[in-house]
Length: 350
Image (cartoon, rainbow, N blue to C red; front, side, top):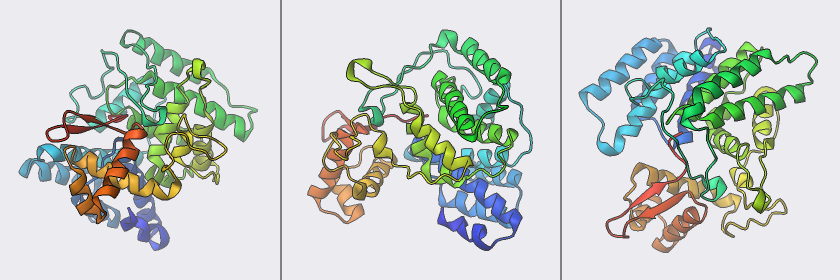
Protein backbone atom coordinates (compact mmCIF):
# COMPACT_ATOMS: atom_id res chain seq x y z
CA UNK A 1 0.00 0.00 0.00
CA UNK A 2 2.92 2.34 0.68
CA UNK A 3 3.68 2.21 -3.05
CA UNK A 4 1.01 4.87 -3.69
CA UNK A 5 1.95 7.28 -0.90
CA UNK A 6 4.28 9.26 -3.17
CA UNK A 7 1.30 10.27 -5.30
CA UNK A 8 -0.63 11.46 -2.27
CA UNK A 9 2.24 13.57 -1.00
CA UNK A 10 3.66 15.15 -4.13
CA UNK A 11 1.77 13.91 -7.18
CA UNK A 12 -0.47 15.90 -9.44
CA UNK A 13 -4.09 16.27 -8.19
CA UNK A 14 -5.43 13.76 -10.70
CA UNK A 15 -2.81 11.19 -9.74
CA UNK A 16 -3.48 11.74 -6.04
CA UNK A 17 -7.20 11.18 -6.56
CA UNK A 18 -6.54 7.94 -8.43
CA UNK A 19 -4.12 6.77 -5.75
CA UNK A 20 -6.72 7.38 -3.02
CA UNK A 21 -9.31 5.31 -4.87
CA UNK A 22 -6.86 2.47 -5.50
CA UNK A 23 -5.80 2.41 -1.85
CA UNK A 24 -9.44 2.13 -0.82
CA UNK A 25 -10.17 -0.62 -3.34
CA UNK A 26 -7.15 -2.67 -2.32
CA UNK A 27 -7.69 -2.06 1.39
CA UNK A 28 -11.27 -3.32 1.22
CA UNK A 29 -10.02 -6.78 0.23
CA UNK A 30 -8.79 -7.15 3.81
CA UNK A 31 -12.34 -7.68 5.09
CA UNK A 32 -12.05 -11.15 3.56
CA UNK A 33 -8.37 -11.57 4.37
CA UNK A 34 -7.42 -11.12 0.71
CA UNK A 35 -4.29 -9.51 -0.69
CA UNK A 36 -3.89 -8.44 -4.33
CA UNK A 37 -0.87 -9.58 -6.31
CA UNK A 38 2.23 -7.58 -7.14
CA UNK A 39 1.04 -7.62 -10.75
CA UNK A 40 -2.14 -5.77 -9.77
CA UNK A 41 -0.13 -3.21 -7.78
CA UNK A 42 2.14 -2.50 -10.74
CA UNK A 43 -0.80 -2.32 -13.15
CA UNK A 44 -2.57 0.09 -10.79
CA UNK A 45 0.55 2.25 -10.72
CA UNK A 46 0.45 2.53 -14.51
CA UNK A 47 -3.17 3.63 -14.30
CA UNK A 48 -2.30 6.26 -11.70
CA UNK A 49 0.49 7.52 -13.96
CA UNK A 50 -2.04 7.90 -16.76
CA UNK A 51 -0.38 5.34 -19.03
CA UNK A 52 -3.41 3.04 -19.21
CA UNK A 53 -7.14 3.44 -18.59
CA UNK A 54 -9.14 1.50 -16.01
CA UNK A 55 -10.63 -0.53 -18.88
CA UNK A 56 -7.12 -1.51 -19.91
CA UNK A 57 -6.34 -2.42 -16.31
CA UNK A 58 -9.31 -4.79 -16.21
CA UNK A 59 -8.37 -6.29 -19.58
CA UNK A 60 -4.78 -6.88 -18.48
CA UNK A 61 -5.89 -8.58 -15.28
CA UNK A 62 -8.34 -10.79 -17.18
CA UNK A 63 -5.67 -11.68 -19.74
CA UNK A 64 -3.09 -12.34 -17.02
CA UNK A 65 -5.27 -14.96 -15.35
CA UNK A 66 -6.45 -16.44 -18.66
CA UNK A 67 -2.87 -17.06 -19.75
CA UNK A 68 -1.77 -18.42 -16.38
CA UNK A 69 -4.81 -19.62 -14.41
CA UNK A 70 -4.53 -19.23 -10.67
CA UNK A 71 -3.67 -22.37 -8.71
CA UNK A 72 -6.18 -23.65 -6.19
CA UNK A 73 -4.56 -21.78 -3.30
CA UNK A 74 -4.31 -18.59 -5.40
CA UNK A 75 -7.89 -18.28 -6.63
CA UNK A 76 -8.74 -15.65 -4.04
CA UNK A 77 -5.72 -13.58 -5.14
CA UNK A 78 -7.34 -13.49 -8.57
CA UNK A 79 -10.57 -12.39 -6.87
CA UNK A 80 -8.73 -9.66 -4.96
CA UNK A 81 -7.10 -8.37 -8.16
CA UNK A 82 -10.29 -8.27 -10.20
CA UNK A 83 -12.50 -6.83 -7.45
CA UNK A 84 -9.90 -4.15 -6.62
CA UNK A 85 -9.94 -2.97 -10.24
CA UNK A 86 -13.74 -3.02 -10.35
CA UNK A 87 -14.09 -1.06 -7.10
CA UNK A 88 -11.67 1.51 -8.50
CA UNK A 89 -13.79 1.82 -11.64
CA UNK A 90 -17.05 2.28 -9.70
CA UNK A 91 -15.61 4.80 -7.25
CA UNK A 92 -14.17 6.79 -10.16
CA UNK A 93 -17.58 7.24 -11.77
CA UNK A 94 -19.76 10.26 -11.05
CA UNK A 95 -22.98 8.27 -11.19
CA UNK A 96 -25.22 6.94 -8.44
CA UNK A 97 -28.85 6.10 -7.74
CA UNK A 98 -30.05 5.43 -4.22
CA UNK A 99 -32.05 2.26 -4.79
CA UNK A 100 -32.02 -1.49 -4.17
CA UNK A 101 -31.32 -1.94 -7.88
CA UNK A 102 -28.11 0.10 -7.56
CA UNK A 103 -27.04 -1.96 -4.55
CA UNK A 104 -27.58 -5.21 -6.48
CA UNK A 105 -25.85 -3.77 -9.54
CA UNK A 106 -22.74 -2.89 -7.56
CA UNK A 107 -22.52 -6.47 -6.31
CA UNK A 108 -22.97 -7.80 -9.85
CA UNK A 109 -20.27 -5.52 -11.23
CA UNK A 110 -17.84 -6.44 -8.48
CA UNK A 111 -18.27 -10.20 -8.59
CA UNK A 112 -19.39 -11.11 -12.12
CA UNK A 113 -17.45 -14.19 -13.22
CA UNK A 114 -16.25 -14.73 -9.64
CA UNK A 115 -19.48 -15.75 -7.88
CA UNK A 116 -22.27 -17.50 -9.77
CA UNK A 117 -24.78 -15.49 -7.74
CA UNK A 118 -23.27 -12.06 -8.54
CA UNK A 119 -25.98 -9.43 -8.29
CA UNK A 120 -28.55 -11.91 -7.01
CA UNK A 121 -30.36 -12.01 -3.68
CA UNK A 122 -29.38 -15.12 -1.73
CA UNK A 123 -31.95 -17.91 -1.57
CA UNK A 124 -30.59 -19.69 1.51
CA UNK A 125 -30.12 -18.84 5.18
CA UNK A 126 -26.66 -18.19 6.59
CA UNK A 127 -24.68 -18.01 9.81
CA UNK A 128 -21.11 -16.79 10.21
CA UNK A 129 -18.92 -17.40 13.23
CA UNK A 130 -17.18 -14.19 14.26
CA UNK A 131 -14.01 -13.83 16.30
CA UNK A 132 -15.26 -10.53 17.72
CA UNK A 133 -18.26 -12.49 19.08
CA UNK A 134 -16.05 -15.30 20.37
CA UNK A 135 -17.35 -17.65 17.70
CA UNK A 136 -21.03 -16.66 17.83
CA UNK A 137 -22.96 -15.32 14.82
CA UNK A 138 -25.11 -12.33 14.02
CA UNK A 139 -28.71 -13.27 13.20
CA UNK A 140 -29.14 -12.35 9.54
CA UNK A 141 -32.42 -11.84 7.70
CA UNK A 142 -34.10 -15.00 6.41
CA UNK A 143 -33.92 -15.74 2.69
CA UNK A 144 -37.72 -15.55 2.39
CA UNK A 145 -37.87 -11.92 3.59
CA UNK A 146 -34.77 -10.43 1.94
CA UNK A 147 -36.37 -8.61 -1.00
CA UNK A 148 -39.17 -7.11 1.10
CA UNK A 149 -36.78 -6.14 3.92
CA UNK A 150 -34.33 -4.51 1.53
CA UNK A 151 -37.05 -2.51 -0.20
CA UNK A 152 -38.54 -1.42 3.14
CA UNK A 153 -35.23 -0.13 4.50
CA UNK A 154 -34.55 1.82 1.32
CA UNK A 155 -38.04 3.32 1.31
CA UNK A 156 -37.65 4.47 4.92
CA UNK A 157 -34.28 6.08 4.19
CA UNK A 158 -35.70 7.86 1.14
CA UNK A 159 -38.43 9.37 3.32
CA UNK A 160 -35.99 10.46 6.00
CA UNK A 161 -35.07 14.14 6.21
CA UNK A 162 -31.63 15.21 7.45
CA UNK A 163 -32.83 18.81 7.74
CA UNK A 164 -32.14 20.30 11.14
CA UNK A 165 -29.91 17.46 12.31
CA UNK A 166 -26.60 18.21 13.95
CA UNK A 167 -23.44 16.66 12.51
CA UNK A 168 -23.47 14.09 15.31
CA UNK A 169 -27.12 13.19 14.71
CA UNK A 170 -26.43 12.80 11.00
CA UNK A 171 -23.58 10.37 11.66
CA UNK A 172 -25.67 8.40 14.13
CA UNK A 173 -28.50 8.05 11.63
CA UNK A 174 -26.12 6.91 8.88
CA UNK A 175 -24.59 4.36 11.24
CA UNK A 176 -28.05 3.04 12.03
CA UNK A 177 -29.09 2.77 8.38
CA UNK A 178 -25.93 1.06 7.18
CA UNK A 179 -25.77 -1.35 10.10
CA UNK A 180 -29.31 -2.45 9.20
CA UNK A 181 -28.48 -2.67 5.49
CA UNK A 182 -25.45 -4.84 6.21
CA UNK A 183 -27.35 -7.07 8.66
CA UNK A 184 -29.93 -7.96 6.02
CA UNK A 185 -26.98 -9.64 4.29
CA UNK A 186 -28.62 -9.74 0.89
CA UNK A 187 -25.65 -11.53 -0.67
CA UNK A 188 -24.12 -14.88 0.19
CA UNK A 189 -20.60 -13.52 -0.24
CA UNK A 190 -19.18 -10.07 -0.91
CA UNK A 191 -21.71 -8.37 1.35
CA UNK A 192 -19.31 -6.11 3.26
CA UNK A 193 -17.35 -4.94 0.24
CA UNK A 194 -20.56 -4.14 -1.63
CA UNK A 195 -21.96 -2.25 1.36
CA UNK A 196 -18.72 -0.26 1.75
CA UNK A 197 -18.74 0.82 -1.91
CA UNK A 198 -22.42 1.76 -1.67
CA UNK A 199 -21.70 3.72 1.54
CA UNK A 200 -18.95 5.77 -0.10
CA UNK A 201 -21.15 6.55 -3.12
CA UNK A 202 -24.09 7.52 -0.90
CA UNK A 203 -21.94 9.77 1.28
CA UNK A 204 -20.83 11.61 -1.84
CA UNK A 205 -24.45 12.02 -2.91
CA UNK A 206 -25.20 13.55 0.49
CA UNK A 207 -22.42 16.05 -0.03
CA UNK A 208 -19.56 14.45 1.88
CA UNK A 209 -17.03 15.00 -0.88
CA UNK A 210 -13.93 14.77 1.31
CA UNK A 211 -14.21 11.20 2.50
CA UNK A 212 -11.09 9.90 4.27
CA UNK A 213 -10.55 6.89 2.03
CA UNK A 214 -7.45 5.89 3.99
CA UNK A 215 -9.81 4.50 6.62
CA UNK A 216 -11.01 1.78 4.27
CA UNK A 217 -7.45 1.22 3.14
CA UNK A 218 -6.15 0.77 6.66
CA UNK A 219 -9.15 -0.16 8.83
CA UNK A 220 -11.48 -2.24 6.68
CA UNK A 221 -11.37 -5.12 9.21
CA UNK A 222 -12.44 -2.67 11.93
CA UNK A 223 -15.29 -1.50 9.69
CA UNK A 224 -16.60 -5.05 9.37
CA UNK A 225 -16.25 -5.82 13.07
CA UNK A 226 -18.06 -2.57 13.91
CA UNK A 227 -20.98 -3.72 11.73
CA UNK A 228 -20.99 -7.05 13.54
CA UNK A 229 -21.10 -5.42 16.99
CA UNK A 230 -23.88 -3.08 15.87
CA UNK A 231 -26.05 -6.10 15.12
CA UNK A 232 -25.36 -8.59 17.92
CA UNK A 233 -26.98 -8.97 21.29
CA UNK A 234 -27.25 -11.64 23.97
CA UNK A 235 -29.33 -10.24 26.80
CA UNK A 236 -28.78 -13.34 28.91
CA UNK A 237 -25.11 -12.37 29.09
CA UNK A 238 -25.64 -8.63 29.29
CA UNK A 239 -24.43 -8.04 25.72
CA UNK A 240 -26.29 -5.37 23.77
CA UNK A 241 -26.20 -4.05 20.22
CA UNK A 242 -23.62 -1.26 20.12
CA UNK A 243 -23.26 1.21 17.26
CA UNK A 244 -20.59 3.35 18.93
CA UNK A 245 -17.76 1.63 17.08
CA UNK A 246 -19.40 2.22 13.70
CA UNK A 247 -20.12 5.82 14.70
CA UNK A 248 -16.44 6.32 15.56
CA UNK A 249 -15.46 4.95 12.15
CA UNK A 250 -17.88 7.25 10.34
CA UNK A 251 -16.73 10.27 12.37
CA UNK A 252 -13.16 9.56 11.31
CA UNK A 253 -14.38 8.97 7.76
CA UNK A 254 -16.29 12.20 7.13
CA UNK A 255 -15.52 14.55 10.03
CA UNK A 256 -11.76 14.10 10.34
CA UNK A 257 -12.34 12.45 13.71
CA UNK A 258 -9.34 11.29 15.72
CA UNK A 259 -10.70 8.12 17.29
CA UNK A 260 -8.10 5.37 17.73
CA UNK A 261 -9.63 2.29 16.10
CA UNK A 262 -8.66 -0.94 17.83
CA UNK A 263 -10.28 -4.22 16.88
CA UNK A 264 -9.63 -5.89 20.22
CA UNK A 265 -11.75 -3.30 22.03
CA UNK A 266 -14.79 -4.59 20.14
CA UNK A 267 -14.45 -8.16 21.37
CA UNK A 268 -17.45 -9.06 23.53
CA UNK A 269 -15.09 -10.15 26.35
CA UNK A 270 -12.97 -7.02 26.29
CA UNK A 271 -12.95 -5.08 29.56
CA UNK A 272 -13.02 -1.28 29.45
CA UNK A 273 -10.77 -1.31 32.51
CA UNK A 274 -8.05 -2.88 30.42
CA UNK A 275 -8.50 -6.50 31.50
CA UNK A 276 -9.06 -8.53 28.40
CA UNK A 277 -10.63 -11.75 29.63
CA UNK A 278 -10.28 -13.47 26.28
CA UNK A 279 -6.57 -14.09 26.73
CA UNK A 280 -3.81 -12.35 28.64
CA UNK A 281 -1.62 -12.32 25.54
CA UNK A 282 -4.00 -10.16 23.55
CA UNK A 283 -2.18 -6.87 23.95
CA UNK A 284 -1.66 -4.19 21.36
CA UNK A 285 2.01 -5.06 20.90
CA UNK A 286 0.97 -8.50 19.63
CA UNK A 287 -1.79 -7.36 17.26
CA UNK A 288 0.50 -7.04 14.24
CA UNK A 289 2.23 -10.37 14.88
CA UNK A 290 -1.08 -12.19 15.29
CA UNK A 291 -2.44 -10.65 12.08
CA UNK A 292 0.71 -11.75 10.24
CA UNK A 293 0.25 -15.34 11.41
CA UNK A 294 -3.43 -15.19 10.47
CA UNK A 295 -2.57 -13.96 6.97
CA UNK A 296 -0.16 -16.89 6.50
CA UNK A 297 -2.92 -19.31 7.48
CA UNK A 298 -5.34 -17.59 5.11
CA UNK A 299 -2.86 -18.00 2.27
CA UNK A 300 -2.23 -21.67 3.10
CA UNK A 301 -4.81 -23.41 5.27
CA UNK A 302 -2.61 -26.51 5.75
CA UNK A 303 0.44 -24.57 6.92
CA UNK A 304 2.18 -26.00 10.00
CA UNK A 305 3.58 -24.29 13.07
CA UNK A 306 7.05 -25.28 11.90
CA UNK A 307 6.52 -23.57 8.55
CA UNK A 308 5.14 -20.46 10.24
CA UNK A 309 8.18 -20.34 12.49
CA UNK A 310 10.53 -20.64 9.51
CA UNK A 311 8.74 -17.93 7.51
CA UNK A 312 8.60 -15.45 10.42
CA UNK A 313 12.01 -16.36 11.85
CA UNK A 314 10.51 -17.23 15.24
CA UNK A 315 10.85 -20.32 17.42
CA UNK A 316 8.44 -23.24 17.15
CA UNK A 317 7.11 -22.59 20.65
CA UNK A 318 6.44 -18.92 19.77
CA UNK A 319 4.64 -19.95 16.57
CA UNK A 320 2.46 -22.35 18.56
CA UNK A 321 1.63 -19.62 21.08
CA UNK A 322 0.57 -17.27 18.28
CA UNK A 323 -1.66 -19.99 16.83
CA UNK A 324 -3.16 -20.62 20.27
CA UNK A 325 -3.99 -16.92 20.67
CA UNK A 326 -5.86 -16.92 17.34
CA UNK A 327 -7.74 -20.07 18.35
CA UNK A 328 -8.72 -18.57 21.72
CA UNK A 329 -9.95 -15.43 19.97
CA UNK A 330 -12.18 -17.53 17.75
CA UNK A 331 -10.42 -16.42 14.56
CA UNK A 332 -9.33 -19.90 13.49
CA UNK A 333 -10.38 -23.48 14.21
CA UNK A 334 -8.63 -26.76 13.49
CA UNK A 335 -10.50 -29.25 11.33
CA UNK A 336 -9.26 -32.83 11.32
CA UNK A 337 -6.04 -34.19 12.78
CA UNK A 338 -2.81 -32.26 13.32
CA UNK A 339 -1.21 -34.29 10.53
CA UNK A 340 -3.86 -34.34 7.80
CA UNK A 341 -6.28 -31.61 8.86
CA UNK A 342 -6.55 -27.94 7.90
CA UNK A 343 -7.29 -24.51 9.37
CA UNK A 344 -10.73 -22.96 9.07
CA UNK A 345 -10.87 -19.16 9.06
CA UNK A 346 -13.84 -17.91 11.07
CA UNK A 347 -15.97 -14.91 10.11
CA UNK A 348 -14.81 -14.73 6.49
CA UNK A 349 -16.51 -14.55 3.05
CA UNK A 350 -18.10 -11.17 3.52
